[in-house]
Length: 113
Length: 114
Image (cartoon, rainbow over all chains, first blue to last red; front, side, top):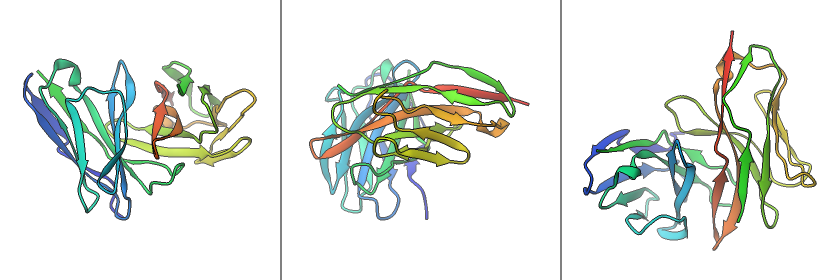
């Protein structure tokens, strides 16, 4: 069974630009979550989607948004990029039950210059 | 709110040494607890989990017991290998607004030397 696939692996953007990251979950997984990983803040929850609906959202500004398509694939978008948005963005999928484990992709490394 | 506190690293051990990584949590309700591992250049992988008090999760020689009385979920391994070098994250699940999220600790870097 294929794992969680994130594209692209690396991105370099300039301040003020916007960026879109993509995530394909494991087949059959309907929940997709996004996390931001930085050396200073560690892993922080961005949002979770299930059946194309956002079920939960972390404490990030409105510049961070996401969506989920009918095939469970998900995208997240960051507008008006800031230097502090440089991070590893991890996508995870799960079967959606409360204590089911998350399966993570290898992440997209975003660098904002 | 819910939170997880892990011992800070880096932890450096010789091969075959005993490993303990401490993890304590604060939570309302009865969360599930997890240990994830991240190898260089990769995403996180689930190492083990426990869903209720006194449960013991185990995998690949690693163990952790869900202790409600001490709000702890310490990770242990009797004999580490060089291949265990990685960053280890303790996490708890929180069910909110019918969805759920994981709250992660800051991570503990482990280096095992031959």
